Image (cartoon, rainbow, N blue to C red; front, side, top):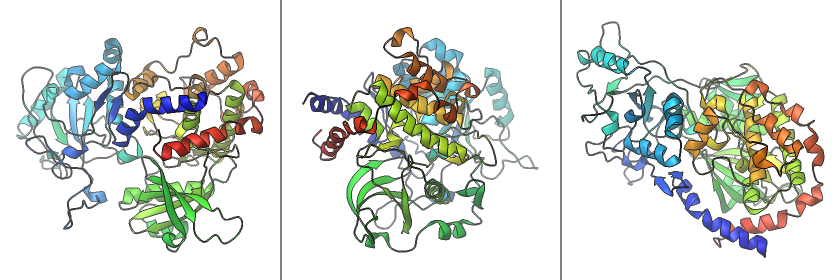
Amino acid sequence: MKFFSNIFKKNKDRQHLDDADANDELVDSEQKVIVPSRKSKRNSVGSISPTGSSSPRSGKKNNDGNCEPLTEEEDPVPTIICISNLKGLQKYDRKWLTQSGIKDEVINDNFPIVVHVLNFLRRKDFIYYKYVEQPEQIAQLKEMVKDQVPSVVVTSSASSQNSPNYSSSDEEDEAGGGRAKNNLSIPRNAAGSQSPGVIVTSANTNSGGPSSFSFIYTENTRRIDSGRIFMSPGVFFKFPEELETATERILNEGNPKEQYKNLDFEARGGFGSVYAAKNKNPHCANDKQMVALKKMPHRTLKQKRMNLTEISFMKYCRHPNIADFICSYQRNDELWMIMEFLEGGTLSDAIHNFTFCESKIAYVAREILRGIHYLHANNICHRDLKSSNIMISLKGDIKIIDFGLAIDFSIEKEDIHMCGSPYWMPPEQIHGRPHSFSADIWSFGVCVVEMLKRRLPNHNSRLKSMVTTATEGLVLSREEHAEWSDEVYDFVHRCIQFDPQQRATAEQLLEHPFLTKACDLKDIKEILPALFMSNTLSKQGLF
């Protein structure tokens, strides 16, 4: 009974955070401050009204009053704001930094990193901060454009009263990230006039603060796999040239509604929604009666490439510690992916509802590492390992899910692409430096710390978490964690090395003495009924 009372209490305490996340709002829970998403303030796609009010990003209204989906060509391009210090940020971002608890000296000493983090966290909005090292450069830029582009208004961005949306201009903004840009010039054609696709916009003009200007700039930087659709390590279809062929090869034919029936909504992620579904016509005893059904928007070229690539990764990866892929279909403008249903819930659920001893942590860590080792041995990097992407079955199986950000490193051995989830992202990605397989090891190490401490490091603010990771790393002193054994402390220490070259590999970690402490499967099964019950009660809205 004490176990269930704790579950009720913890879930009640977390309710306001869950609601905020569901509405895509930015939350700093320590101060109970919610910085609302400003998606609803766009008049038309990519434009801001004179009053500062705007309409959703979802597109133009059709005859029925519903929003039409954005096409690839309709995606808004960002407004770039050049700034040289903290005062150049919009006032709501300055307030967010203050309430996140980051010390002023850390912000000032690492301001380019802070700007990079803000751009990532605001990536689905449409303004991008460009850091200018010397304030004099902004004055030079003003002189450069004043005669050629009269509509540019040099202004103090700190004094803006509007609330425009924020984003990086990376092609993969919805995939969780982008690269920093270094080009400050406005592109021009041979005649010296403004190049096509560059639209200069005005900003409010007020006195005080450092000067900055903004313009819309269409150039994108792309992740290294943006021109291909994965089939198997080192094998891919060219994108978009072979999109139709890839679709025929990857997807199943038929109408999924004839085979599967939605039962319960399970979760919503960055790339789609997951439902528990029933197989209405199992053909044999091995066919699963219950399955997990992931529905993903499948309208734009970007969505099609990412969806087909994710399905191909799931289809290729066959391992006891990776969720089983069953089939996939296209249903109108959605793509349906059918996977095995793991009713035990996520590792995140288990962490919030159960205290893990080191032997159980060792068991879970070993199973996750086996999955990671399989991926890395096949030149696949997951890039979004976190506790909510680790599933537990009622049989005690530990399985990795969600390959929406996975990448094949068979050809290129590293990528420069800021992607993943804030609390689990490694320092090199936050800095915009090349990353490789060691990024997964860092994220795995954070999951182990999460099990040990029953909460994430810097869990009150993802802004503070990312800035701290980028500037200090993840510091766990031996004195503050005297209850940890030497084995688990060394194990974690090898995972969260600031220098990615110094991190242990999955193969090396599987040989670590800490994993010899792993409990038996029957010991893990003891917690599963209570975990399943807590998930069931949560779905029914009882807490």
